[in-house]
Each structure stands twice: as C-alpha cells, then as structure tokens.
Picture 1 (cartoon, rainbow, N blue to C red):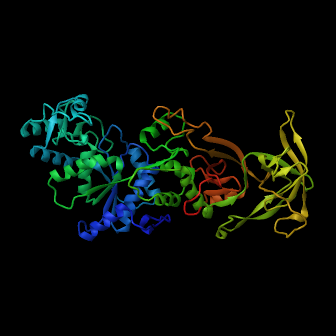
Picture 2: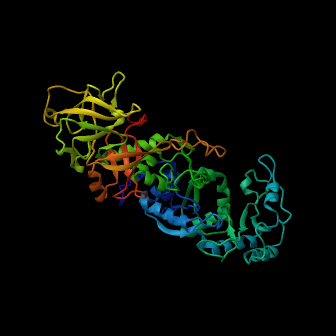
Picture 3: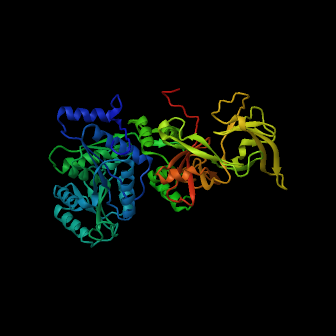
Length: 562
C-alpha cells in the first residue's frame, strides 16, 4: 500500500471464508462492486482489535478494487465526543488506511427516522410505555418465551402521533420507546420486539440539540450500510445473534436490491492484553496510566508511542488471518513481528542503561579516539558512524562482577573483555564507597588489540558496549513489561496491574543519537539492550527520552520457522 509498505491479505493463499463468499458474489452477479466499511463508535480510542477488524474489511475491498468507508456510529450523545473522532481519524491515517469519508451516522438521522415511520405505517413498529426494567421482564428468558407489551396493539395512527411527539421532545427519557413488532416467542431473544428508537435529551457533538430521539445500533446500522451502498458488512461474531434483526430491518423496509449482507468473523484475543473500551477507560481514569497513549496499552496511539510500526502490526494481523471462531494468540507473537520489522529498520547505537564508571588509567586524559561503528548489523544501507572513545567511559553495571558464577563472560577483576569497536581492557582495581558499593573500575587497555586491526595474539570471551563519560548524553529510558501480572477481570482489573510494568532509568547514550534524531530517525537498537523509540511526546533535543519497544530476543518461535 502507498506510504507505509502495507502488505494486505491479497498476497495470501488460500482464500479465507469471507474471501470465498465475496468472490462467489461477484462471480454470480449478486454484486458488481465490493464495498466494505469500518464503523467505530467515537466513545474511545482504536486498539489492536480495531486494527484487526479494519484489516479484514479493508483488505477485502482492496483485493477486489472496491471501496472502503470510515463511518462513525455516533447515535449515542451520552458517550461520544469530537476528541474521539479526531483521535480515530489520526489513527486511521497513521495506519495508512485509505478510506472513503469519513461519514457520520448522525448525518442519516432524518432518513432513519423516516424508515421508522415506514415500519409504523406497515404495522411493524409501535410506541411502548414500558420502563426499561419492565421491558426486560416481559422479554422472557432463554427457556421461556416473552409476553406481549400491553401497548403492542396500538393503532398505526396513535403510534405515528406518539412517535412524532417523541421527536418533538414532549416525553422524558425512558418514558417511551419505539419497538419493532416481530415475535415475543422467538428463540432468539434479540428478535423479541427490540427497541429501535429511544429518547436521549443530551447535546450531540455534531448535531447539537436538533434531535432528542436516537436510533439503536441494531436498527441504524443496516440502514446506514444500505445508504452508503455497503455490500459486505463484516463484523466480529459477537453480532451473530443480531444478524436476523439486521436482515429483518432491510427486508421489511422493502428496499430495492442489492441489500448489504452481514458476515461475522472470529474475535481476536491477545494474552495479557485487554481491548474492552470499558476496561481501557477504567485504566485511564484510574490515573495509574499516562492516558490513552500510554505505551503499555494496546491502543493504536499507545502502540505507536511504544514504537510499534505499521508494517509490524499488519504482518501480525495477516499471520492471524480471518478465523471463523474466536481465537487467542500470545502477545509474544505480536512482539516477534515487531522485532522482525525493526531488525532491518532500526539504527544501532550504544547506550548504557545502568552506568558504572570505568577509568582507563593508561589512556591519555586529553586523548579522544573516534572508532568506526556500523549503524546496522543486518542492513548495510544504514551506513556507519564515528563513536568517541575516551579515558573515562561507562559500562553496564551488570557487565562486571567481583565474584562471578561459572561461564560469566564479561568483565571481572584481573580479567579482560573487548570494548565493542574498541580495544581489550583489563580490570585492575575496584573502587567502592563507604557502604561497600562499587562506584568505579580502574582498567588498562592494550593498544595492540584495536577492533579491525587483525590482532590474533589472544582471545577474550566477552565483548561489552560502552559510552564515553565526557561525550555521552544523559537520557531517560523507560522499560516496559506486561501491564498485568495475570489475565484481569472486571473485579480485579486494577489489582492485576504489574507494579514493574514501567521502570524508569537514568541512562547515557552515545552523542550520535542527536544527529540521527535531527535527521528524523526515531527507532533505534540499543546494542544488547533491545529496540527503543524516541518518545515524541516527552522528548526534546535537550531532554532525551526513549521507550523500550521490545527486547532483542524472546522465547517465541514462528510456527513455520521452528
């Protein structure tokens, strides 16, 4: 796809079950042009589950050279806001999805109202005075049929008058609703005279106070699809029981063909991740997180700030495909595709996350040597850079041990390691503070052992990274782990939060990072520490902040690669 290297499912074989349905519809002449849509309600932010649904509908439209609409299902002013609309549009654009619109369900209010009037005139809708609790009581159970509302047999004339008065604002919320007249004994509870219009006296972010009655989603959605010429209304299988109402609405409005058809696919679940808007809002409102773009969240904005790329997200989604049944995948599968993508794209630099000072005692105090370093170990197109090496450097604290275990291949007292791109150094002295904490190492270097010199006199087992103490730049590094210690439920959502899900470190990074950032580079591989991204919300050239995207390795193994 244009702009972001997007690879959709059109490249994948064999065809999935939705693909086969669409291909057959075209082959038989049932439809002549494929038209799909993504209809988010603007009451929250898009997340990885949203991207999953987008990818399915968008890819089908692209494969058959059709159209793909973005339509906001904004028929509930109590929950919706323009800020969510703007965030969704921003996310769609960042994902690189090309859509028709955006369209707004609220723009069709008059048409949907007229369609409701049409059903009343056909004797298929009536105004009901039962309270919400009474409607639930009358509806029955899975094993017992419902019973008719006492208002079910109102005349067409009375229903038309009452519905018009509902629109005029003469009744209060909950006082009256408009219901479809279907079958109170239906085995599908959804079909037991569902509410199709209700009274909501709240200002709408788009239409203001023009309306005080709003259609229910199950009534509005098929009509909106029809108005826009949608041919295949693809949704997750939580709507499978609602499909008969979708079809009933279209059929009983006596609309000319072709009519849109609803097709369900399996819902996506990811271990350790919650995508419920209710859960996400509770997490954000709790103050535990930084907002909807917190890098620990599976929102598109959170993943973007975390450093996930569009290509990695879509590669993950395409690997999942389009299952019929609900599926659960390991979050490490997503991280695998992030690593795979960044391995070729990320610029490699050296950063020391937990610094320990090293003084190279036989190095001249004023001497600065610039050593050559590749910007990538897999992609030569990223070029190389010069890194300053000086008398005083920082290494990772974990790269030195006084009393090492067996097979410890880093620096020890009396032992040697290679400085990446530099020389062998040997630790001769350990400096401690009054509490016995190691604060400094004194080492010597061997000038015959420069990296790339061809020196073969002896070998060392370990190579460690480093940053010049005088040239390195202080930075804040944020390390992320799973947000939850266990799969959360509604009852223990906040209690399940992992207290170590974010760890903030005061670190140091080589000075070349500034040149890369100024050139627009945002994704880095910090040698041996993982993949990191410049946090464009918090960072500035004089305040470097990096978020760890993923570690360099995981236990995940791609099923096709062993």
